[in-house]
Every structure is written in C-alpha cells, then in structure tokens.
Figure 1: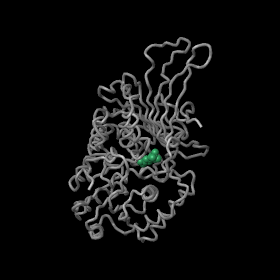
Figure 2: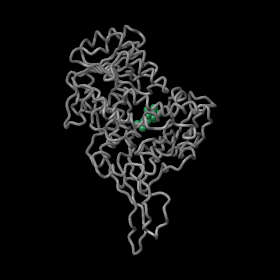
Figure 3: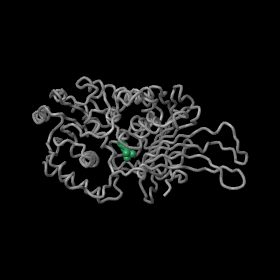
Length: 503
Ligand code: BG6
C-alpha cells in the first residue's frame, strides 16, 4: 500500500492507481458532475484507474443508478458541445465513458443518519476507499464523525481509507483549529487530504519546477533583486447563484487563505530538501508562519456596482439574488503582505482578487528592481523596472519574461520587450479539468498537493485579525467591468503588451 510519506512525483512513469471505491458525498451536486466525473473520465483515458475501480455516489435525493448516470453523461456531453466550456474535449470516447459508468452506482442516503454509514460499511467490506466530501462545509464534521463511528476510517489490512475535504476549511482560525482537532480525533493526518483546486492547475505546479530546476531564477529570488510581487485572481463572473454562500463568506474567506496563499507559497517558499510530501508542506507552513498578520491598513475591501462586463450590462452585488440590499460583503479584496524572513524582508507581496472585474486573469507578477546604475542616458529614468517575470495561470497558461532591449537605430534608446512560453503550445496536451492529478495523487496516497492541518492554520492566522473588519467597514464601491477600487498601483487587468501571447 502506498503511504503518505513517499511522492510519486519524484519517480518517472505513471502507475495505475490501486483499486479502490471512491465514495462521493454530494453525488448530485455541481462539483461532482462538472469536475469530478470529467476528471475521472480523463483518468480512464490515461489508463490510470484500476480494473477494479468503483465509484459510489451518495445524496439525499431519491434517484437510481440509471438516472444518476444519465445526468452525469448529459453534463459531460454538454462540455464537448460547448467550445467555451473550461473543459472542452473534441468528443467523449464512449468506451472510456461506458467503462466508468459501469462502475458508478448511486445510493440515496441521509448523512445525518448513522444507518447510511452502517450500510456503506456493509457494501465496502475490506476495500480501500476514498470518502470525497463534495458537500457544504456544515456537513464536513457530521459526515466524518459518522464515518469514524461506523469504523469506516479504520484501515483494513493492506487497504486504505482516506478523506478528501473541499474548502472552506473553517471560517476563521478558531473554527479551522476546532475542525482539525475533531478530524484528527477519528483519523490520522496521513488519511486526510484537504483539497485546494488551485494546486491541480498545471501552471501552478510548474512554478516549483521553474524555480528549482533552473539556475536562472533562484539567485535573484530575494528582496535584494525583487521589488514587489503581485498575485492576482481576477474574475469577470459575478457570484452566479451563490448569494447565500457569498453573503456569509466574501472574497477574503473565499479566495485568500486558500487559493491566493497557495500561489504565495509557490512563489516565495524556500526549496524543500526533497519532493517528499511533508518536506514540501513543511516549507509552505514555514513560509506562511513568517508572514506578518494583516492589520486593517493592509487591506482594501470593495464591492461591485452595476456596470458592463464583456459588453453585457450586469447588476450590482446588492441587486443579486439572496443578497441584502445594504450588504457590506466584499466582492473584492486586496492585501499587502510582508514576509519576515531573510529572503523577503522589504519586498511587499500584493494580493488581489475580485468578481466582475475587467478581465479573467490569474497570475503572479514578479517585479525586479531597476538596475543599480543608470547606464543609458538617453532613456528617461524609469521609476519602475521593465524587468518582470510573469506566471500566467488562467486563462493563459505560460510564463513571460519582460525586459528592456536596445531599440534598433543609431542612438541608444531602450524599449520594452518580452519572451513568452505557452504550456498549450509547448506541449501536446489533451484538455483537462484540473482535478485529475489531485484525484490520482489521493489514490496513490501522495499528499504533496494537499493542505496539512498546520498549513491551513498558519494561513488563517494571517487573515484572522481582519476577517471581521470586512463587515465593519463600508467597502469601496467599484463599477462592474473595471479594475476594482482605485487602491494601490497594480498591473492593469487589460494590459495587452507585452503580456499578450504572440500569435
Ligand atoms: C472557488 C471560489 O474556490 O474558486 C469561487 O469559491 C471562484 O468563488 C473559484 O470563482 C475560482 O476558481 P478558478 O479555478 O475558476 O479560478
């Protein structure tokens, strides 16, 4: 049985994942049909699932195998038909899909009823199992507690039992600690896979490779050479139909201690001594532990008003369904972080995320300091250096390096230039959903990409002092379709050159 202490990431080749049953709580939810099943389908296409793989969906609604499979099939077919879908395969291979469907069964079950779990134990017997909690966070502990009580978290001889927990993991430091303590009273840390889907994105995983497999970057990766780092997750979508969830959550809790801090870790952590999951995760925790907790002057909260996004008029946040007419919930947050260690003292890390902004753009922009001596007299003295390294995560997947060159001509004048690497053009890749590696790793018992209890708590510690400030302060209102509140100097969201990929 693979253990949690070894990483397949350091070994070449792909092994078929060990046989197991993936039990999905929340089988009829969006996550299951839009992300989990398309990812399982891709794993089938890559021949990474065992012949004896099974997937069982549990949900409260009356349904049966045939109806559940049909709903899953309709969703994946709709992706193949929609060129704008985030996962857009040319076609769905019917052999692969049938293979998966022949292993997919549905059980009606109430997760607050112990009988659901006793029946599950009967069906699983001694099989290895992954319990995937694709449910609202209020059901996390009720499900885990009952899994524990039914003996389902005890690992039978030669088999594993693992938990996959979606976000939000707690709503502040105290609740995250409490949830960790409760979970660890019924399961071992090695059985717990706290998921952050940003870690499933290839360009995010590649940041460590770029930083630590090359000599080019690491010597300058410190405050002496790096003036500031901007981390952006800008979205054009609004809150969609999630008014209830969003009112209680807001942009800070929804995106910062999880997704943006994972990007921060990838950009700023020290090199681990190996790819062992705990070596990697210890470095992330060490980095987050060095970040000074945020004060109210380090954050800006915003909320979108009506405006135009991609040429379409959209309502303001307060006019969305299930949102209070005087809501102060932030749909935008910017935070200025300082990392108190030898490498980063003096380099601010500016993080921003928001809904209904000018462009969808998830990226890390590393701004280098200007050259120490201005050698080129015919060029206006720059206040900002042209030298930047940009990790583009969404919607483009690539890396850009921007710098100054000499503009061709008889005099010496500098001009900005850039070079761009695209993962999509550089590699022949089939479209993926972003959960494939996460599911596969969980089956192999490799927790490298998942959050450990201490990493989650280190993240909440940073934002905890300002969590309630979001509700106390009136947010800065911004027009939908713009760059957000006029707070600090940022790379414009719609900048074209040189950040646009050459055709
Ligand atoms: C989710 C948030 O975790 O991440 C959403 O709850 C957000 O509000 C989403 O839209 C962003 O993820 P991605 O992969 O689309 O950038």
